[in-house]
Length: 94
Image 1 (spheres, rainbow, N blue to C red):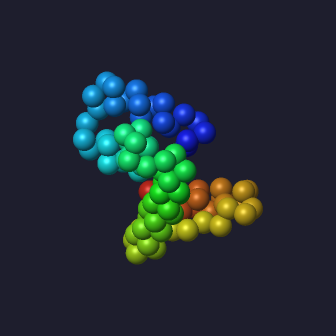
Image 2 (tube, rainbow, N blue to C red):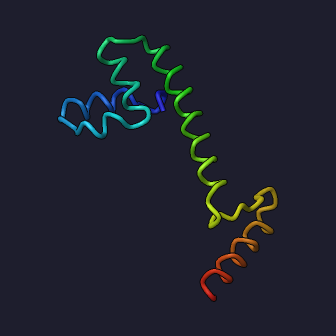
């Protein structure tokens, strides 16, 4: 995200007056800390990496607890596509 220009994006958004809610988004708040001089770029990157891992862990916990979620092994693309199509056909009567 940093290598693809996140700091420039956040800087431009700050200059255009984007909302407080957007400032709480993952990645944005860490870069804002850096741009405001409250941490180094290295610290911002480390925090962003840590918070991204935590967010992904929370998502996986939520998905595992949702009975509507059906996991598909995608190691064999053809088999995975067939399985997804079968799930959709069953769920939507196709």
